[in-house]
Image (tube, rainbow, N blue to C red; front, side, top):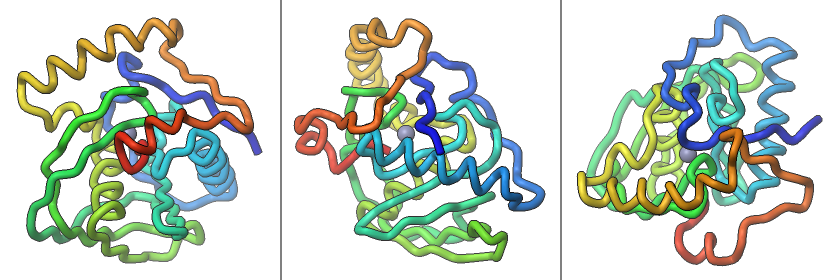
Length: 188
Ligand SMILES: [Zn+2]
């Protein structure tokens, strides 16, 4: 088990399309476990493979004490609308209100390779949409209006200096500042 470095905005891999997983192997289960450990170390509630420098179509989500490992996740139904203030482990200290579907149904393979469906509203629904966006090279700032996006990128320009290699290195016991938890429901 290991905590992995998190790629931050500017790293090309965050903009790449991921590759569907052909079969859920022990190696991929290990990767999922490391992603979960990394996500918890960063006090996050979701993490997608490109955020740890990988191209597999895989994300992990942990909301309301329920944890999901999702291979090849796909939104198969969505309904309604909501606005949610989002953050991202790959864009620390930057937040923005995003329009999302109020409810989504996701089809994926679980850690045994079996097909599963996950339905989510509120934070779980938002997290699923945010992580699946990551698997297609999309970030929450892409959903912001021109002006809000420009503000977010300006805020990031200052933060970015902390990550000279576009990597965020976490140590066990590292947690985000309480401000994060107050500003948003968790980084994704
Ligand atoms: Zn994110």
